[in-house]
Each structure stands twice: as structure tokens, then as C-alpha cells.
Image (cartoon, rainbow, N blue to C red):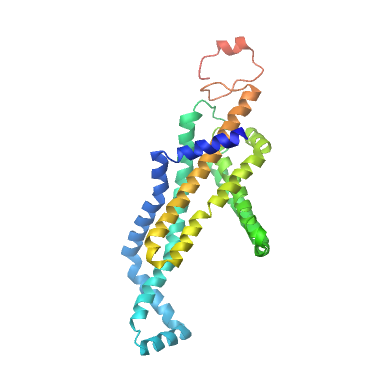
Length: 292
């Protein structure tokens, strides 16, 4: 419980740091760049393609002809840009968030390490390739669980339990691995998973519920069309901030757990890149040069 609460408050305070706030604004900046670039190169061709597609739908074209006879000819000119905007916005948002997520996690881990855990030895229990494989396999497993459990979402209590539980498990799997991949050995990472699985899963579930906040803002943007341009960027920023908080919470917890694990085994040397065996005597350790 102490480690759970300590890492929570630290993650919360870190979210107020200018560096973290700037990182959380990256999705908006990237979305703006992607939108302007796409609009400059592909706006007209995309409108032409959508116009041809709508014209090929006989029922829709009949409705548009009826509206034109009723004096609403300008509706077709408005509908095409709206269809394009509503279709392309989710794609640009997802692309921005995925790109920033890949950049944000290493930056946040480095921030925590520099400020609290620079003394931890680097055992490099994984590589970028194993991290990618771990993320992909965990994501596929979570998607399979979502599909299998989908019929149960119709049951009122379960619809509020299953999705956060699944995404909490996914966050726990991916973010703990990313936090420990450089500093922990495979054995240490597995030991931390066994000792702290319940608390780490709880962190994932709680942050999974926090991840529903952007969806509420997004839904408000759909209901209040006049505020769409304000609420949707706000939802994206909240999502990025929740992601940053989640990553910081897992990182603080995981590295503190690693520090405690090594303190228990007595194998930690401040600033060392290779741990000294626990069975070495004090005299043997004394004659070794520093930073070994």
C-alpha cells in the first residue's frame, strides 16, 4: 500500500512539471501539422472521391434530389466537406496519439530515472525488439479478450467492470515492461510481477477508468456541435495527460519495487552498471574500484 500511494502522488506531482505538460501537448501539435498537411495536399481530391461515392448511392442521391426540389440545394455542398471531416478526424487523432505514445513513454521513464533512480544498475533484460513483440502480443491478447467478452457488456454491472479490467491488464503488461526493460534483468522483472501483480493491476484498472474521461468530452463534442472545435482538442489533451500520468505511475512503482528488490538481495552498488555478487565479502568489495 505504501508503494502504491507513494508512486501515485509522485506521478500526480510530475504531471505538473513543465516537461510533462509539453509532452502532453504534443498530440495537439502533431494533429495540427497532420491536418494542415493533409488539407493542403489531399482536400480537393478527397472531396471529389466522397462526392462520387455519395452520387453512386442511389437512395442517398434520390434523397438529395428531393431536398434540392424543396429548396435545400446547398445541403449537398455542405454535406461533402462534413463527411470528409468526420471521416478523417479519427484517423488523424489515432495516428497522432500512437506516434506521441511511442515518444512519450521513453521520455517519461528517462525523467523518473534521472530524478530518482540514476543509481540503479543497468541489467538490460530486454531490447527494443522484445519490447515491440511484448506490446503487440499483449495488445492482441487484450483485443481477443474484448471480443470474447463483448456479449457480457450488455449486463449493466459488467459493462463498467470488464473494459477497464482488460485495458488495465494491458497497461500493466506494457508499461511495466517498458519501465523495467533497461534496468531490470528478466528474472527481476518476473519477480516484481509475482510480488506486485495485484497492486500493478489495480493501477491499470484505475487508470483505465480515467481513460474514459476523454470519451465523455468527445461525446459532448458530438452533442454540442457548436463547441466541437474546442471540446475535441480538449479531449485529445486530456487523453495524452492521462497517458502521461499512467506511465509515470507505473514507472515510479516499478523502479521503486526494483530498488527494494535489490536492497533485499544486497546486490546493489550505487552508480554501478554491473551488480556485485551478494556473497562477496566487505574486504573484496572495498578493493574494487568505484563504478564497477
